[in-house]
Amino acid sequence: MRAGSIGGLLLIIWLVLGGVAAYERGYFSDTSDTSCAEFSTIAVTTIAGPLNWAGVNPKVSCDLDVPEPSK
Image (cartoon, rainbow, N blue to C red; front, side, top):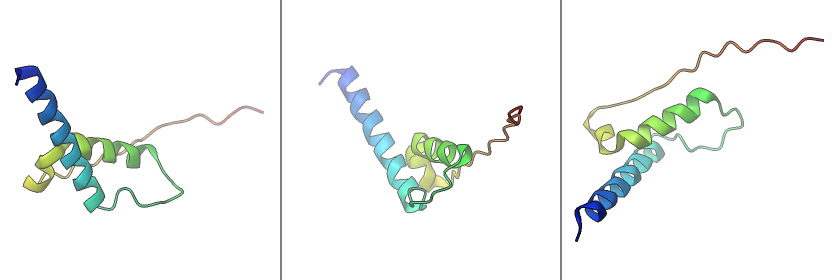
């Protein structure tokens, strides 16, 4: 097996484990108020992979100042 294919396989396993961790935390529940913070937290939890079980609990807050539309 080549080193590139081993690295790719490890990356896929890493991300799958991160997805499992996000699922275990209930991030994929069907809620209508999906926000920037919720999506970002799911993404960083998935990227953190197996580190989630080592105590890493990534959370993201999105403080966006969106201007009101003019009339």
